[in-house]
Length: 339
Image (cartoon, one colour):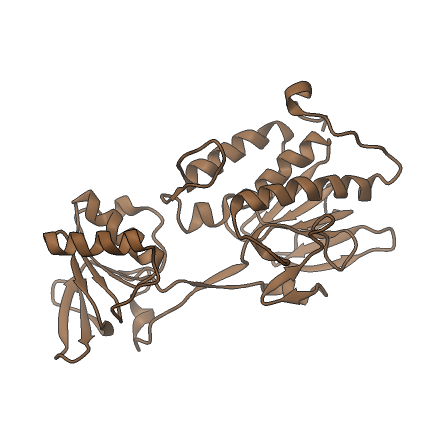
């Protein structure tokens, strides 16, 4: 059994920053995450994408933000249970929570902080009958390392920010043949990205196919993907490529956490934002994108704020008779606590 002061479910940016804020109060933390490495979506889904709203960084790549956070919390020596998901929770007669993972690892703590982002993600897949035969073998729903696809013929489907961002990224590298397929003429992406795609198409740098959808997929005699594309009002056409990325977004689900007796609203955990981001169960908090309240903004920097407030409340929950005086790090400095 792993025992700590705060069990943090989710090792994304908000979960990692919670370790820092807790460490300042000499509270020990242990993080649980289903992914094999810390960083959450920033490490798993878009490591190469820039983030623009982190204070002090005009622009920082998602993976670099994770590395900075890991460096920041290193003095506090957090524990990790990675590659395992939190399955069940129970509270003993002494007020300690026991969180058990899908692999049977048991964690014990007086406080649980759920920082699981938007939850467990599953890709939205297009209705192509034999699609599963090509998954991770030419068809991918997430682009982790774009360098793998250099000098490849690439087709991207979708009209949101992810599809446009990656289409522009590959086009600007000028090491790829890029085709962007979208099923209508209107996009859900930022206007500047849409205009760039149109400009690049007019310059001949990328091919833009509107009112079009991939209907069938197979391989040709050279093992390239052969996509049968239906264009509204025209005959179907075939496109050959090395890789197809259907980027229609990811559907988040809370997973087993939804069965823990927490108050849920629209696939998120309701919290008391006027106080400390506590849930309806005393000792369990929810911070970051996983929670909801009136005026909620799903931004990493808002999650950082929620973590700082939550940890102050967690200290009082763990040590009700101790008086914690806020001290600025400019005065105290940063040192790890005794193990």
